[in-house]
Image (cartoon, rainbow, N blue to C red; front, side, top):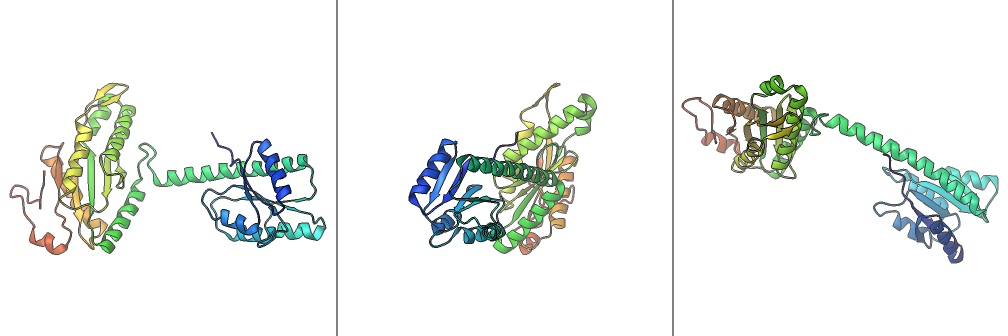
Length: 331
């Protein structure tokens, strides 16, 4: 359901009697009112976060007048469009044109009828309601463009962009970035046994458990099919197996509740820690090889491929598994 626009109005009026009367009337209509004594104070209030969408500005004020406030508000880059009602004792046609050209959405001359004021505010609220719907539609499209429809996790493309960004950040701060490739074991059998709807439920819950197993500032995306990719910021090769094992256990130790009953699933995890200057293709290749090794050696396990914080450390510490030739395996 679309929520309505802000019920808060900012009024800028230097006449204290008119300001109190206007504030009282607006509050009677259910608005929350923020009152500014002049244009300068109003501009300072409008620099704060969560400013009102509805503004009633007097034209003639000391400091900044209503016309200048309108110009500044339109020059300011805002995510939300404020609706501005300019109030003035001037009623010549050229004055109305000047106010509207400065950025006002509507114009009301003093003294005005309270019924007319209320009607104009209602018109402004209708416009703000449409704006709110457009903002929500934009955010929904943005989410769909960067997130997986089924799991709600980051999409493959977005995850790759996040990985690239983390590798660049690690290069600047001289920290390592960890990644985990997590693949459901025998997922085809789950689909064949229970059907694709149950398979989808398993994928969704698996993604949820991985998301909560990693740290709050890490990124988790659906890499493809039944495979997930976790990007771990500032994560050393020593920390990587701990986080990987936590994710493996979060999935494998508790069956997933579905409409077909409890489904027990396990995952194989391949990890790598990128040293400074390492490219995304390199670290993904190491993690992919580690995942393959986890599958080859029995599944439901963690294998960490070689990846030190510097290329020199990596080369000096390279150890081969005599059985597989796979470098630096940690279980």
